[in-house]
Each structure stands twice: as structure tokens, then as C-alpha cells.
Length: 363
Ligand SMILES: *Cc1c(COP(=O)(O)O)cnc(C)c1O
Image 1 (spheres, rainbow, N blue to C red):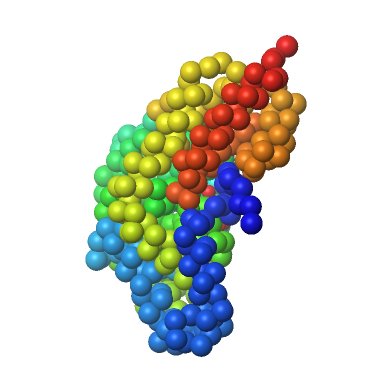
Image 2: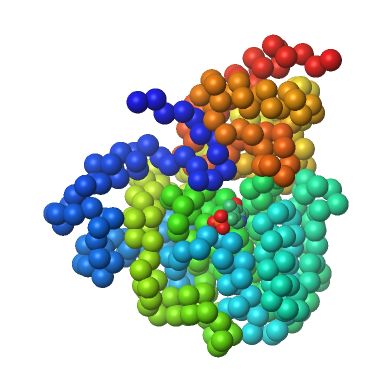
């Protein structure tokens, strides 16, 4: 069995020990006599799995008691609609920072519903090569919330600091950086993330929401999008994505066994530094992102020649370094180096980059 280094932005690599444990438990879980895939979500065995998943996530992220943790479906994209539907009732208006494609989609979704939303700042005119500078004064003081995307998966940018929004609840899409490092959850009103980047297979969306923000939902909204209903029902208003939650539990267990998120951060910083240090030491590849906005999870680079970029991705794949082609909207290359990417994968990538540059001189 040959496993490659998979640099996909999502769905992406899962830790090998997690896959091995899931495989060992695939057909019969514990003494239940059945697979987790076959279990009633109301059974004691499953109740224990979802309770453990939540407890471990709370421990890892140090989530304060006045926050609810929800296990939902629909992907981060469904939350683009759920966020305004649940929160706009607070004051009737909301502010968005557009730092890439996903935050742009979130903004458009709120606009589409006819709400009073404004784009406070964007880096669109610079092709999203940095996070726009923000100050508290830029936001409308009576905004119901400020929405940001904390790590921009497609462009490879990340906020260097949590923006200061004063008393306005900050809502963050953390799909591509959740569990990559410790974050101060208390600085956010809501954190949400599609799990398929750094947590679990596709099909699970995590929402972490401060309890006092559960009171503003539009009463006419679809029940399935209402955080309060999901919170009151322990994420089991309907059938939750049972198996994906189980794998998320295994991932949390793995992270705890490694020492938690501060240890993971050190490991991730080291991996990212290997790539960025190489990029900064040469001129064959160009890293388009401004240094202060660099992502630790998604590293983007180009050769400056679209044909060479194509050749790079193709030959890298043949060498066991898969999915390095950049997002279809931006081109170039992107190495997604989430928690599960071993440092060996990054070392191999840099060695490949050196060989490729030597073998393919530019005209
Ligand atoms: C992948 C991604 C999304 C979209 O997630 P889905 O689960 O496919 O809806 C949204 N935001 C960010 C930051 C992402 O990386």
C-alpha cells in the first residue's frame, strides 16, 4: 500500500494513526457488534462518541463554558446563509471584510437575502495578496456582527492578529485553520468551519457560538439553519453526520496525544518555515502573498509561466506529491500543509522544487 503526500486544500490528508484506528474499528465498534456507520444516533454507544468529540474539542480549543459547540451538515457554505439568519436580528445590519473568495461568497449571500450589509474593507484590488488593515473605527458601531475569513484557503493568507471589533461580535470562518494552533475563542462571537480541511472527512460543519447570540434568529428561518434549535437538541434535532463526527473525535484524540494545539502550532510553524524559507532564498519561484499575511496552512507560489506551472504540478504528482495545482481561479501552485501533512512531505516538496528549477531553466 503506497500512500502519497497529498497537498489537497480539502478534502485533505488525515493523520495515518486516525485512519488506522478507524480501519480497526470499521466493522465492529467496541462491543457494540456493529459499525459506527450502522449505529442509531440515539444509541448509548453513539451518545458517548458525540459527547467525547465535544469534550475533546472543548479541551483542545479551551472553549469557554458559555459557548455551544454544534455538529452540523451543509458545509461552511451553508453557514454563509445561517450567519445572517441567526444574527442579523441583533441590530438589523452587518459588516463584512472581503479578503478572498469565501468571504466574498459569505458577503454576497447576506446581500442576496436583502439585508443591510456592507463590505468594510477588501484586498480585492491587490488580488487578495494580503489581509486588509482594520481598525475598530472602520466598523459600524451598531453592526450585529463583523464577518471575517480567518485563513484564506485559495490565496494563502491569514490574519496576523484577531481584529479588534470592540463590542461587536466577531464571526470567523476558520475552515482551513481550525485546530492548527491555539486561538482565544473568547475573542469571537461565532467560529465556524467545514471539517474537511483540518478535522475530518467532508460532511461535518462545526459551529462554536456564544450562548447570548442564540437569541436573534429570524423566527421564519428554516429550522435546520437555526443554531438555537441545534443547541437545544445537542446537534441531534435530526440525524447528525454520525461517522464524520466519529472521525473528528479520533482526530481530536490524536491531537491531544501529541500535546494539544500549542505543540501542533510548533510543528506547523516548522513545516511552513521550511517552505517559506526556501521560497525567500531563491528567485525561480515567486510567493505572491505579502509576508505579514502568510498562511501557515496554505502556501501559494508561481513560476511566472503558466506552462511551467502546469508541468510542475504534473511532474510533482508523478513523484508522489499530489494536488499541488493552485485553485482553478488563481492558477500557479498551492501546497496545503494541514496538521496531517508530515514534515517529510514538505522536505520532499522543497527537494522537488530545487530539482525542477534546475531542470527547467526559464528563457
Ligand atoms: C473550503 C472552504 C469553504 C467552503 O467549505 P464547504 O464545506 O465546501 O462549504 C469555506 N470557507 C473556507 C475558508 C474554506 O476553506
